[in-house]
Structures are given as C-alpha cells and as structure tokens.
Image 1 (cartoon, rainbow, N blue to C red):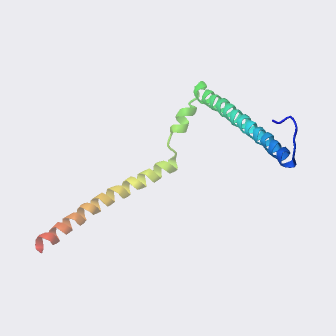
Image 2 (cartoon, one colour):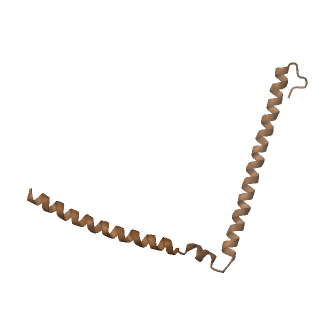
Image 3 (tube, rainbow, N blue to C red):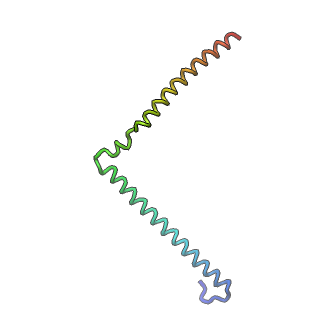
Length: 99
C-alpha cells in the first residue's frame, strides 16, 4: 500500500484492494466454519446412530408396509409384462412363419 495517496483514483484503488482482501478473508472464515460445523454434525450423527444399541439402524433399514405393498405390485406387474412379452413373441413367430 502506498505511503501517500496522490489522487482520488489511487485512494479508491487502495480501498478496493482492502475490501477485496477483507472479502477473501471472510470467505475463508465462512468456509472453515462450515467445514467445522459439518464435521461436528457428522460425528454427532454417527455417534447417535452407532453408539446406541436400541435397534435404530435396523429400524431405518426396515421396509415400511406401504413400500412393501408397492414393491409387491411392481413385481406382479413385471411378471405380467414378461408373460405378455412371451405371448407377443409367440404370436409374432406364428405370423412370420405364415408369411
């Protein structure tokens, strides 16, 4: 930074440099604070899930009745689609052999 400022433009340039440095420093502080909070939250969540032995993880992995019902309906639909595909393939073969 210059010892004396000889013009308004020079003063403005110096001021903008200071503001830019302050902005950069604040961004670094925010980044560090965010990382610290995320790390602490992650450690706390893991500790709460792993540290307890009351079946919390098992409960989270269990399939809800609504999801189980949807899965069963989808499996039935898949089975019907496969059967329909086979029937259509047989029909196409018969049509192709008659031509």
